[in-house]
Image 1 (cartoon, rainbow, N blue to C red):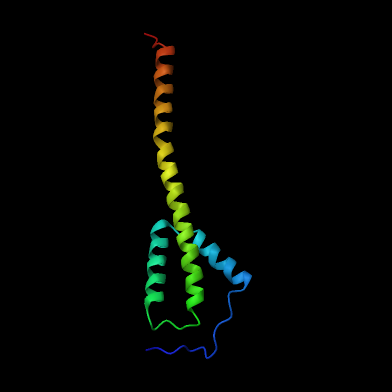
Image 2 (image 1 turned 90 degrees about the vertical axis):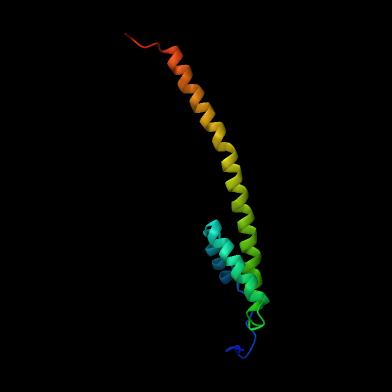
Length: 104
């Protein structure tokens, strides 16, 4: 088992460190978030994880899960709105074609 190279426990995240982590997680794609979440969950289940890192991994995991839910919901909302826009555009083209007869 790998020993923690830091003899004392790490201090909790500072506000700047937490903000930097959150900013990095906010720009990840859905696939990258899923990968991050899987890695974090595996790390927390691993007994080799240094106790000083556990709170930091938990914070990152919680934020990644929150961002994943937000991004998935936004994607679903965007997918639900897309067909309505296509129908409106199609109706508009048909209306223009009927209103403007071809000059022969």
